[in-house]
Length: 130
Image 1 (spheres, rainbow, N blue to C red):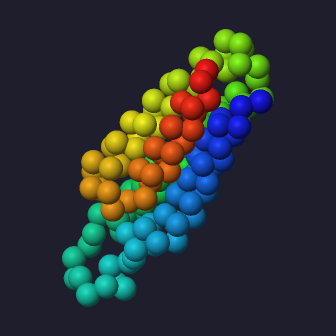
Image 2: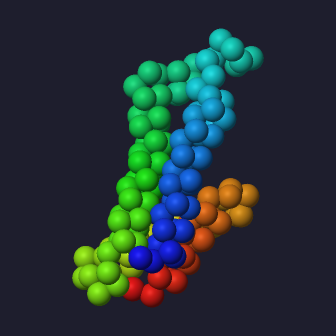
C-alpha cells in the first residue's frame, strides 16, 4: 500500500467536494442571479435556462473528473508497486494535477486556492515513486 497515493486521492476528493459545494453556493448562485433581482435593466446571457444548465454542467464536470482521479489514485495505492496498471495511472494523473495547478496559478494569479490542492496532490502522487 502506498500512503502517498492515498494522500493524493484524498486531496483530490476534498477538492472535488469543495469545488462542487462552494461553487454551487457561492459562484454559481451569484452568477445566476436573475436580472430582476439586480439593478440592470438589460437581459443577461445567464438568464437563458440552456446556458445556465450548460454552465452548471461544465462546473460540476470538473468535480466529477477530480473524484474520478481520486478513485484511480486510491485504487493504485492498494496495488503492488510492481503492478503495471497502477504505475501507468499515477504518472499521467500527477502530470494532469500539476498542469491544473499551473493553470489555476497562472489564470487566477494565486488568488484561487485550487492551485495548492492540485500541486499537493501532484507532489504526493509523484512521491509514491511508481
